[in-house]
Length: 280
Ligand code: GRG
Image (cartoon, rainbow, N blue to C red; front, side, top):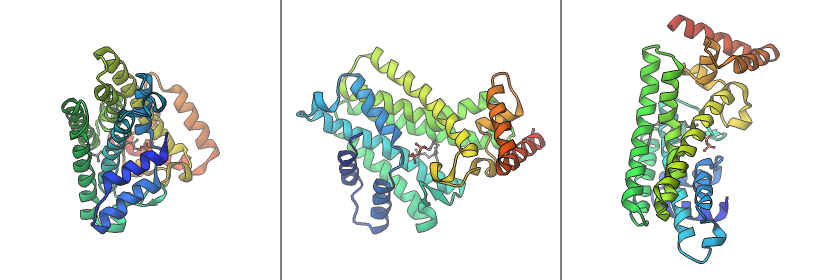
């Protein structure tokens, strides 16, 4: 990931004379995050034969970098909204934006990012298809987030519902990240479909791992306190595994072992079991 070039373009897209928006934008650049999604975009472009070496002298590499910034901005906007919805204290090891600046600034900064990324897309080759794809992904992300609440309020916990939720809230964006360069570069339908399948499957696995890290990771690694999902009552992958199912014995064994070693994990697992059993 050519970080300096990526960050330069990110700063350009996020430029604002409004102080709080500028601070949140700069935090996004400096606090970083793993930048998995823009990396997927650039690697997918490379898989299509369009890496930095192949395109160094043309405009296309710059456009690909800008496209990867757009992908990261959609992710960042969703995080700003998500932290407020979940009432989270920390993101990427720092106090969340709405805790620092309030709800209005946080939501508006997310909307600002969505608006700016649309402006970026409008000038790119393949713009109509790209804009449609970003719009489609954003709407599916919103649906996934709402479905998560719906499932929780109906206490309708099942792997089927879970997979539907994570397809929306996480996999749709990784699917977009992987297939967007195919649109920019005018690749054929079969290449685009293959990248889109890769992104979707990777996104599903990514969210399942994210759910496991919430329980088994360290605060320094995940950038927020461990066990947040459980405290928020989310039906995450490990919770569903604990409730039982045909293909989860291995995960259950890992969780039981960790519970034996770590009192906090044991307490959280007991809590998850208790709450879900009461709800179901
Ligand atoms: C504004 C489009 C839009 C949507 C709002 C709130 C909401 C609807 C969606 C939330 C979706 C969400 C936050 C899903 C979780 C995805 C996830 C695994 C985030 C963590 O990703 P990492 O680990 O984070 O890649 P970093 O910090 O590394 O970027």
